[in-house]
Length: 278
Image (cartoon, rainbow, N blue to C red; front, side):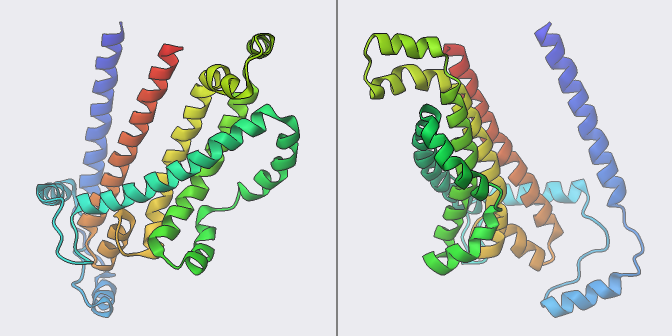
């Protein structure tokens, strides 16, 4: 039954992919454009060549993918690095900000979940700060930190903080009262209770928060790197647009999606592993 479902799902996915490629190919067919003169003028202003009329097709983008993946780690200077290097810089910033956020959010979430007083005291601050767009912090970060890469890490820290904090607090507060009463009867110390009783029970919820945070962090790093420049997949997208290379822009978009999917699958695997051990 499961195998049959997997086969049918794979066939449907293949059909959807073929339909998308067909529509993309049809949309990319050469068309006469009255705006080509404007494109030429814009290209002259940007100091580059005019882009070919129409969207690059799947075959052209596939050629770009093979070309870029053939040597992903080349380094020809500040504005010409391989996609592997660009992804590496982005992942380093994402992981640094993500783990800094985890180091703050998970312990604080335990405190909020275990203490109604702290929950009531901190909730107004959380409700005010949580809706602020992470990119709104970028000017302040650049002014105070004075380093574009560290500013991007700070923005990732901010956007990763809230899902982990809220999910951890919710998971800790939802631990069964009977388990806590048993720990109280056995006179278990607060630290041991947190690690041996609360953490295993709240782990699935905490991992869900971490999974959401990672997805948001990978999304935000692209926009942050467009603003700060230098290196990273976001800067690569913006730089290739400035060079009027739509092939490379589409390749970068696909790369962002694939890396994001891999990160999500990794957290999904860990979540299933924890749930299985439960």
